Length: 108
Image 1 (cartoon, helix red, strand yellow):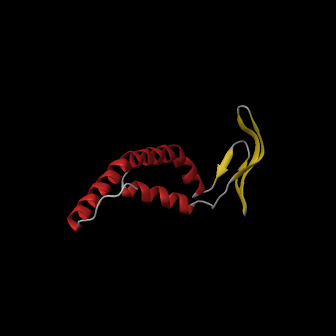
Image 2 (cartoon, one colour):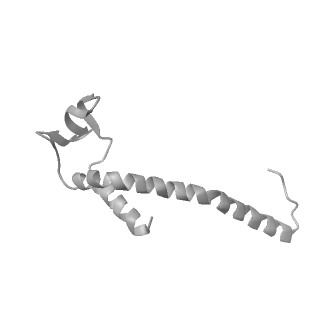
Image 3 (cartoon, rainbow, N blue to C red):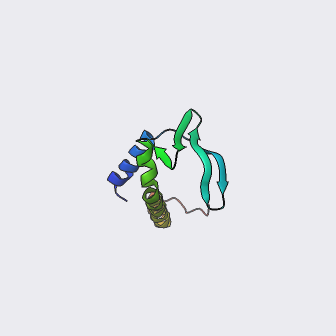
């Protein structure tokens, strides 16, 4: 994920109505047909009127969520995969510095 992609996702998230968002109504086994409104603590985000209607920038945030969330999860997974290698490199560097300083290694 590029810095530009992260910046675009962050901009959409910051422009959208603050959360938490919640449905006002009842969910069914097939979806949210019985839900009447999508709300947050300060008001209504979307209302069901033959469909759900969002105003920008909330509509942009919702529309991108299906691709933003998987991309962010992939990015997290990639970073987590790199982490053990970074830790090992730091431990090796610390051991080399300690060896140069004459410090005995410890088993922490």
